[in-house]
Length: 225
Image (cartoon, rainbow, N blue to C red; front, side, top):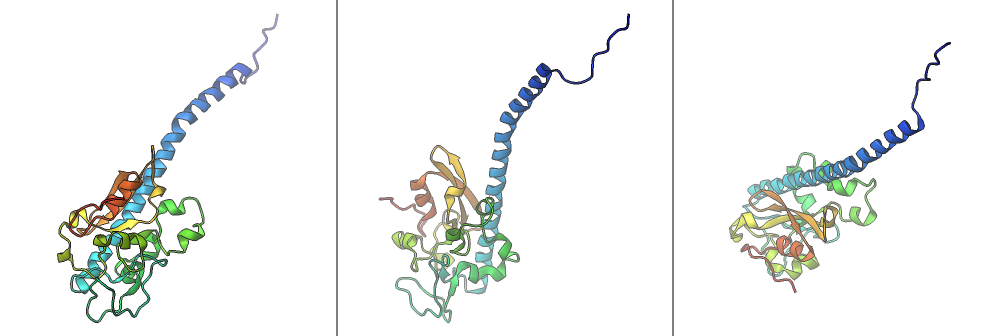
């Protein structure tokens, strides 16, 4: 009597088991990959901020140790030539630049490549409102900027490094849209570039974002009303 050979291949039960295993692995690994991507975008943004902060310090070496006299973004740009700004000293003979990007781009070799936070670009084309300001970051200058005007002690535009009492606690550049780096539970990571050249991400809520972002030149955090 001939012995029947079993056909090679999966049975329905075996196939279902394999599919179940794949589904379990996917459920485990996809969140890991998502977190890894989020961390990579955050680190890329911190790297951008480090280069811009270094560019500001290089600018200051060429302009008598004063912070750039310019606007924070295209939405709040200076319109040179500017001769006066109440309460903010202007470097002699300088009309200022429209934005910080314009002031320090020559000190940053790949300015166009680091213009936007990678998290802004991760979804594809930049949204019109984000692109309209010209880049992803804020420079702390008071000219026509409602937030820096609200916390005037945080302004650096035209001031000297000697006016900053605690450079390691005083941001010079912050992210315009910190909500890009969501941390869950109503928190997000807000990146800062500081006057001493270091960069740091703070895990904060909205009120903490204002406190850590608009620290005064003396190193104190503002009172949030």
